[in-house]
Length: 457
Image (cartoon, rainbow, N blue to C red; front, top):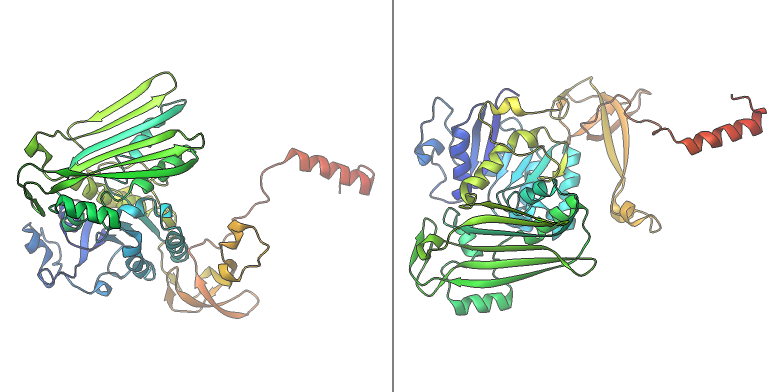
């Protein structure tokens, strides 16, 4: 892959920032932009961002995702539209059904199994079927209050409990975050919406906590969350929000996750508001790991920038996602994030067969669903019952060309014609009989002794 082509779906504060960053990098370019806002549709991207195109092709913003989500036009889609799995599910599936990998900025996509297991499993299955990867990431969740904590815990022999706090400025974020945080609403409205559970606050604590628990092997029994209003004493204005005196500037949200002993193992504290410095509040990221006999304290002051932090995490993970194993991936699965200062295309550790187009006559592996999960026998184990029964077989491709995930026609070695879904699997034998087991060798010798009087066949 000589030049990574990136389509951006959603061109608000994050999407446009991603576009700017890509425009300044090597080995990567924006191939298309989709946004439904009528004031953006039809605009040329570089002109809208007021940056030099530097000889790159013009990119006109469209309202139709089908115009940008196309394997012939793009290598990956950045989905920067919503915070929730349910809101992004159809968009993600739209991309996967066209065999295009996805990076999502949705907070819940950082560990979607936390609150949306069924949808996460569907995304995972479709991504594997199409031979591409999906990742949710950002600054938080995705880094500060989960990935960074996990990395620091790697230096500890034992951990008793962990506290993480992020005091940050919401000013760089767009309208969606302002709405989620209740910026500008009255205290009375805040209390009503908390009672009705219609105010999101920070999205992502269950995802961050379950990611850390999975990574550290901690078994949790419950996660509790609390939300408190941050009321401003002065007028505050950010690019995408306004909080008048006496209204909400943001929300302080905390989460407590208890282990099997009933003790709080993870405590996350996240007061976030627009323009905190206007009232003398200093921002920062703070982590305390209570290890065996000592405390490890880390601090980043001021905070890791939220806006550029999310933008950078997304863009810098593009090569990692393009080279990732197919399926729904998380930050636990991929190489450590880092700033890429050179050519992005040179950072891809790509399986050459994963995205390659197959031609007529190629020997390929195809699959067919024999039984859906709903059709499995009632007596099978629970984890087996959640998976479809799939038949894999090989044959010569009859279609002129195809990519993993396409329905294709094949002719098997025996001359049987069949139709199934093309996979990204290598047709060479990949199975083994497993590792050596001493007990089985003893059984083998006993059987030989019984059958052949001690002489091995």
